Length: 334
Ligand SMILES: [Zn+2]
Image (cartoon, rainbow, N blue to C red; front, top):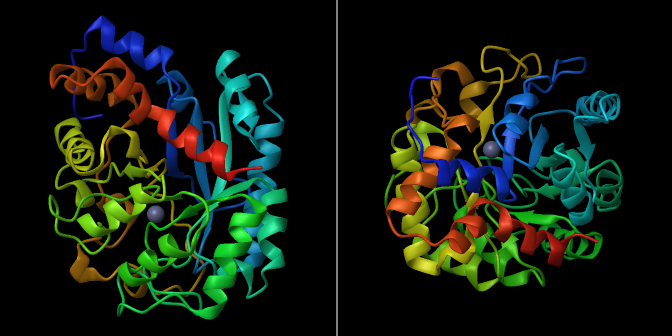
C-alpha cells in the first residue's frame, strides 16, 4: 500500500455501515489457490465481491475446476464467507459480518456455444457475465478489436441471460456490440468495471453514449481501480471518474468494480496463451498483471472522505458504494 490516508471518523463509519459491493475482482484462476486474501475485503468493510472464474481464453474444464475449488474453499469457512446466490444472501452476510461472494465469467466462450450452459453456470454460482473479452468472438465484439455488431447467437444469449437471471455485463465488450446488447436487454445492463473514455482515452474505457445507454436500461457503471484505466491508481482519480459518470447520468448509475488482482505475481494463463493477443502491448498492459497498479480495498474510507468533501450526500455515497448494484441485482437475479 503506497498511499497512507488520514480519514475522518464519518467516512470510516459510513464505510462500515453502508452495503459495499465490489462488482469485480480477480484471484488466480488456479485450482488449489489460497483465497485467504479475501479477508482484506471483509476487513475493509466490503460486503460483497464478484470473483472472476474464467475468461474467453480459459478452457471450460479449467473454468469448472476453478469454480469447484472456489466453492469448496468458501464453503469450508462459513464463519467468514457466504456463497451468495441472492440479494437476501448478501444482506444476511452483511448482518453477520461475513463477506458474500458470487462469480462472473469474462466472455461467452466458456459457454462452448451452448445456451443451456447459462443455467448451469448460474446453478454453480455465476451471477454476471460478459459477451466477449477484449477480442471478437462468435457472440460479438471485444473492445480491443474491430467494432462488430452482436451476432444472432448473441441476441439469443441476451434473452437467455435475462431469463436465467444474471447481471448482463458489457465491460471488455466492443462499442457496437455493447449498444446492441443494451438495446436488446429487457433488464438493466451493467459495465461492472469500466471507466470514462473522456477522462482517460483507452480502448477498455467507454464513451458518453455507452454511459447514457447503460443508465437508460436502469444499469450501473462500476468504476475500475486499475491505474492504467483511471490515469493513475489513486483515490483522486477514482473519485474523478465516479464524479464524471454521476455528472452525466446521476449518482444512481455509478458503482465500484475495483478489478483488484490479489496475487499479480502468480501466472495463471493456460500454457501457450499469447498474452499480447488478449492484452495488446500498444494498450499499455505490460508483460504481466504485476506491471499494473491498483486502488486497494483499504483506500475506501479515503474515497468516501473525498466524496463527502465534494458535497455528495450520505444517500448518494451509499448508492455508489453498493445500493445501485443491489437495485440492479434485485431486478436481474432470480
Ligand atoms: Zn476484466
